[in-house]
Amino acid sequence: MSTVTVRFHGSLNDFLPLGRRDLPVVREFESPPAIKDTIQAMGVPHPEVDLIMANDRPVDFSYRLRPGDRIEVFGLDRPAGLAGLAGLVPTPPEPPRFVLDGHLGRLVRYLRMLGFDTRYDRRAEDSELARASAEESRILLTRDRGLLKRSVVRHGFLVRDDDPRCQLAQVVARYGLSRLAAPFTRCIRCNGAIRPVGRSEVVERLAGQLRTLRYFDSFGRCDGCSSIYWPGSHYDRMSRVAQEVLSTGLPIGENHPDGQGRRSVE
Image (cartoon, rainbow, N blue to C red; front, side, top):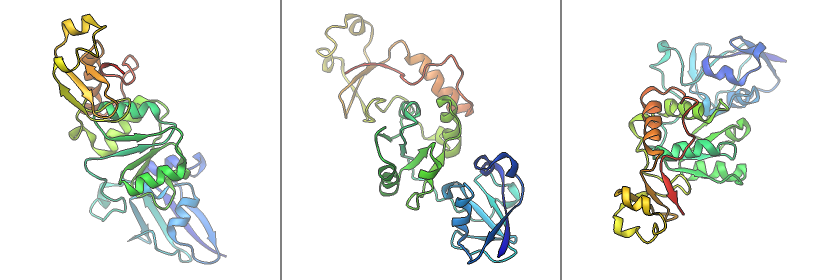
């Protein structure tokens, strides 16, 4: 039986039991496995891995382990001294588009609020989510590490936090979304684009909401579900939410609302 030592660094330790974090772990094998298989068998999904060093030499996922190898594995938060080495995480699509699993429904609302194309069906099977990520070049966001390990997934991130507001901050920081956001240009309900429309185009739809027609002149309509949007009472507050998370990347405070930046009617 041959052995190697494997050590994970930085954020990749999130996937390991407490007793194995930041420590070399001995792995045994008979026939030499591909290093990708070993990394995933230890609990770390391949889309999270950006650099693998075998005996101080960078290797890719096809590398096969050799007896006595010293393996060091890094995520995107690798040390500055290794910054010049080519990474394994592919460049994400730009503008970024997302597909989320059924556990992240509130995060969906946040991402759409910031204007990002976000596909979501809480009933979708794992195979459908993985296929959508691969075929549509979408970044897969999930709470399921098994889903992220599927071989067809190239762009993906395992969302660590339970709080949707902290989840948003993680995703914004991970993918540099601050410079790409266009808040309130996408429908939170269906993901369609919101287009400006004149007051005359919505007056019939809002005939029963005289106060809205009296006090607001700016309206938008979703290309997908035809919902009508206007700067309602939550708009200023949600604008502050968007500004806070995009400018600081910090988790949104507990007193902020959880997703609807404008009032709407069906």
